[in-house]
Structure formats: structure tokens, C-alpha cells
Image (cartoon, rainbow, N blue to C red; front, side):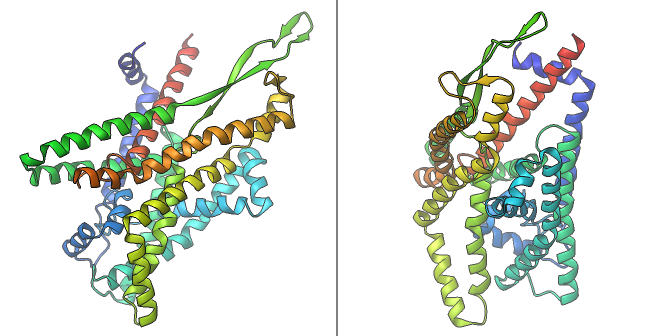
Length: 427
């Protein structure tokens, strides 16, 4: 069955069709909220500031333009993602959190997610205050009164919680991961603006650069799909067992291990960590203390160096790929479950030896995935420097395209799985 036939079959299924329509309705609500500004803001002055500042332009990308509008959801899912990062870091330090996340099953994960929601509130307040104060010091917005500042902080924090709730609604009632889909929607929402920019600044002399740019982008997209779908299959056999007059087991299958099991999460983690020092530096650069201002300006200049920024970004993505995989993938648990089900890897003893074997294979193939993710993260700067094309610099060839492709592939896999389930039920 071709993908077109599967798509037609999908839209014939009322339940699956309603799930897609529900996700699209949530997207519409998100885009509406992204265009509702908080009160007392000069939007034209703010948009000029974002068009001239690469640092804030990157932040604006992941909010789908909500930050440049200073909308009620200007923080996007940043506070929630930050809270998840903090809690997952704590699993490496406190055994109680690790046990809750890995060993207590679905109930433990629900409790872990609840802590993440609770931590989102103070983080949203801190980030909202920091962002508004920073924009005031940078001259992007005029000085606002304490009462209006408090109202704006509460509104922005409420907007972050509202987006978190929308993401959970998508995960519960729609298809796919709600947080990833909302980030995807924010990125794709920038596409019409980028197309308009190309149309307004079109020059036939730049045609070869655009052709080269899009050719390289297609190669990168193909590479993203290849690495995202690539996996190492480990053979697994099951011992024969006789119960009554029937024999069970005796079959061979495989255990798939993705080359990039961490997905796009390491890039989001690395981006959050990398942007934080620059935000703090911008905050102090216009302060009253001359020493702090000088240090902040020096740090800002250091981080804006393309070689420094690219190198740090690559290293952080590489490290977070291993870190996130260590948090979410436990070879010991997999080996234990295989042993309980009578499964074994041919030539490897069950139990601890199987766990060591899986650990060795995982970290070998993970090196390829980590290098790939790091390369994709710094690709926009390389492509932009080679072609001189500034439009689509975030949307094609880098972090954004990895997010878009990963979300599309993951969502399509879930759609196919639900379609196959419907076919089995009909059969």
C-alpha cells in the first residue's frame, strides 16, 4: 500500500480524522494567542529590535514570532522545557528522582511530570521578569510602571502554563507529542514571513546562491531523514518452552537501537544552556555597575564570535546526546526484561553480560548520532557563510529542520501504528 493510499484510508477513519482536526484546532489557538500582545507595548519598535538582534531572533524562532510580538505566550514552552531539563539533571544526582523516573513505572513518570509542571510556575515568573527587564534595558520597550510590570509577569506566566496545557491536550487526545508539535507549529509559522522577505529582496543576480542554498538544504534534509530512521538491529532469540501439549518460543527477532535515540532533545537542551549566559550578559551590560557592564560586554562579544558559538554549540549537543540517552535508555532494564521473557542475544549470556553488550553497542552507534546532531546544529552558520543567503537560515539546514523532520516522522509513525491497529480490529 502506497503512502497516498494510506493517507486516503486515514482520512476515511472518523476517529483518526478527528484527532488530526483537534491538533489543527490547537494550532489555531496557539497562533491566535501568539498574536495577542501584553498591554502598553510599542510593537513596531520591538520588531525592529528583533530584526537586528541575532540572539533574540533565535529565541523568537522557537516561539513562532510570539516573542517579537511580546504576546501573552512570548516565553513559549521555554519554562516547561527548562523545568524538565532541571529534573532530568537531578536524576543523575539524587537516587530518589532516578528511581521515580526509571523504576516506578507509569505512576512514577506521572509524579515526575507533575513536579515538572509545578517547577514551571516559578521558572515562568523568573523568565518573564528577566525578559521584560532585559528588553527595557536594551531600549526595545519603554519603561513600564511596577503595577503594569506585575500584571505583565502574571500574564506571561499564565501564557506559558496555557501552552503547557495545550501540549498535554495534544498528547492525550490528539496524535504525537504535544510539546514537540507546538514547537513544530512555531517554527513552521515563520515560513510565510521568510517567503515574503525573499520576495521583497529578490535580485536575479542572487539566483545561483539560492539554487546552491536549496540544493544543500535538500541534501541536509535527506541526511536528517536517513540518520533519524537508521537503526542497528541486535538479534534476539527466545528459548523453546513446553506448556501442556503446546510449545512456545523458539523464534528469532531483533532489538532495534536507533543511531539517534535522543531525537532532537539534545539540541533543545544545548540551546537553552548556550543562550542563558548571553541573556545574563545582556542583562548586566546596560546596568549601573561599570565593572559588571564591562565583563558582561566582554562575555557577550566572546559568545557572538561565530567560531566560539559554533564550537560550544557542537560540544554541548554532543555531550547532551550521551547524557539524555543515559537518562532515558537503561540497558540493564532491557536485559532483565529479555531474561524474564526467555530471550537472549546469541553468543551472549543473559543478565549482566547482555546489559554490558547492549551498553557497548549503544555507545558505539551513539557516537555517530552525536556527531551528526552537532553538525546539524552548526550547519546554518556554515550554509549562510557559503551562500550569503540570510532568509530561511533558521528554517532550513539546521536545528529547526531537524525538529520539523523528526516531529513529522514521529507523528507519521504514530499515524501508521493507529491505522494498523484499526485494520487488526476490523479483521
